[in-house]
Length: 130
Image (cartoon, rainbow, N blue to C red; front, side, top):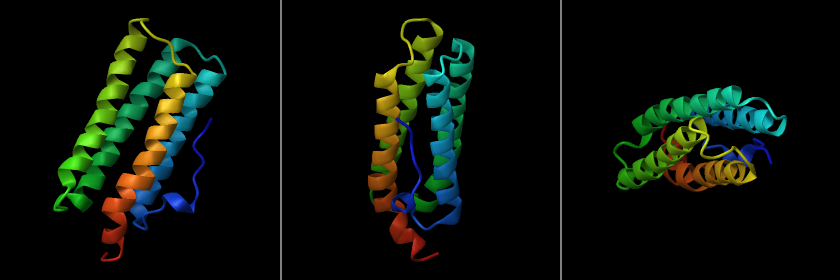
């Protein structure tokens, strides 16, 4: 299960679309490492990269929707995702959990839903004014 970029994910803001593509790529690298049985240190490195990139791109995204009436909903949704991945990574580091298909399914489903629902709702209208 991988994330495949296509035009339905576009919000027509070049910077954000480029970042979405990179988020898909980082996630796919993590999934690929897991599927190939790469050692735990490498999977941990990819998890950290995913969290770091998610935080970075959210900071960019927030500049676009900071004055949106429902901006807090967007912030909470994104913060929840980052928190979940950070907590999972802590448990992974402590050998409490493995990176398996359930975690992959969560990542893929969340990112698809987030980009299709939240970002389309918040950012597509902005793209028409930029």
